[in-house]
Image 1 (tube, rainbow, N blue to C red):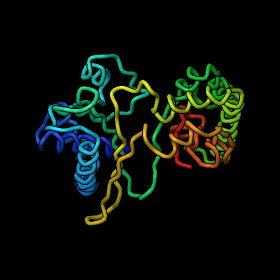
Image 2 (image 1 turned 60 degrees about the horizontal axis):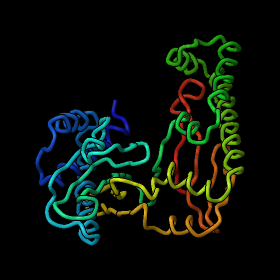
Image 3 (image 1 turned 90 degrees about the horizontal axis):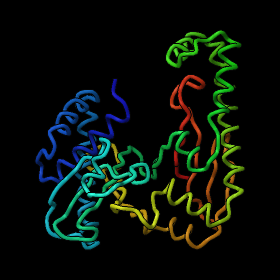
Amino acid sequence: MASNTDLADVNEIYVAYLLAGRKWFDSAAKTQFARKSKAIGAQKAALQIERADVMVQEFLKWSKANNYSGRVKKIWWTARPGVLSRAVGREVDSRKNPTDILVQFTSGPAKGFLGLSAKSTSGSGDIGFKNPGIGTVEVALNLPLSNILTEAVDSIVKKFKLPPNTKARKDAIRKSPAVQAKTQEIGSTVLSKIRDAMFIKLKALNNKELRDYILTNWLDASNDLYPPYVKVTGMGTKSGSITAKVDDPLKNEKLTAILNEKIGLEKVGNESIGIKAGSKKIMKMRAKFESEKLASSVKFSGDPW
């Protein structure tokens, strides 16, 4: 079955293929492209390819306007562990650098290295841009959150006589609408409690601490970011209406607001925290289950607000 990851990978890899001069720069990437294109089907693959073409055009325009010149010297698809670090010759924390495709130009800043974070969407607005797991958030904030989930899971396993194994529990819940109605309700409460605990922790930070946390862990815009990258979003659903835009995480209105205004926090809905800088809405941090409530892991998403 095709997944959102398959769709994204087809788009990313074809972007890299185009930047490499329509040449296969990596045999493993070529194999993955063929496999994932088959998984999503010819029609969806064609759309991702069409978006990729426009994305590359906008990326090259931006790079030229920002002092990257000469030709594209080398391309890396960074989806595999350690690729980004090996490419630039220094340790890079991929959790804080969302580069999907690394390009090295023959001339330009940072030894010609420029990362591309690829996004592909049928809509025309901003899309989710960050998906840290609950463990990542716990470490960054020194805040235990998993115990909220563990206590709830232990409770429903005992109450509804569900399997302790995650997959078996998911199947059992989905086979019983009555049980699923209860686990959905309890799962929503778990997300709300996790959000509330995170909100209390963030409220206790001073403005500088909160700013640094957001820039480093959510916006990937810390001052020591290396290699530099831009987010390139391909948008649209049919030929003739495909567009793309380039966003620099270190040069945009949201970053300017965060650096110059007081940061505010606001609870939004059942499981989100809204972040403002002055009066400008920056983003939402949302807690969610990966799939079935109480039968899958909890992760977070950084969403537009």
